[in-house]
Length: 306
Image (cartoon, rainbow, N blue to C red):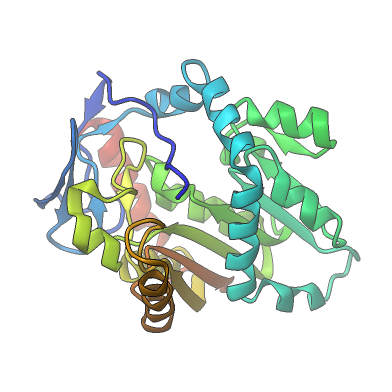
């Protein structure tokens, strides 16, 4: 089993925030972990850390204080991570998208949170025009060692052209962000008409999360949000994406049961949708389902600290 990387629990400036999905301000305790806890929004069910660290504190986890440690972790586990990502994309129907018709020829893919760029390197070899975003020191490695176009700024700060990418990938990223809706909005802006957005993230409604609760391997200090298929699908729909394929996998962690039992649990988890990790492939729609002013009002409240 690959150990989930996380920065140490430590003192950080925090603030109470409304629910990132519905704007609600009523929460109930959900998971108690060592040194931190999660709550569940009474209105929509989104599980989140609250109060939350400020954006600059989150960014520093992957840059100044622990950036080199994160790069070493990624490189040590790179082959295994690449294999898992390729299997997930295969289950999500990524291979079907190679037939995307393009006015400009080569289809374009953006990987947000691409680490050292192993997946981008593989996709480049299969004929994709690849770009990455990675705020940790892994971005420099991807540029220097692999010659990849990987940007070190957060997604919005790169100001990519509108409707530029045919496919956008975000694997094990959205749960780390203080404002996941802002990410999805920006992805919609830069996604071509009918483009696809693949989101991979831990599944709080999965069997392992229910079994282990606060000891679940994805209930870690760096995960600010823990989505279910229901809450992530709602976020995507409200931001203008239509979920068109949903897969989950991982019934039991390696070493948690004899191999035959684990194999059976893994098959059942994938078949019945209670896996430890989920992937949702969605397609960009013409218009978002929720008026933009809803989010403008909510963000204004957040900025004012109310």
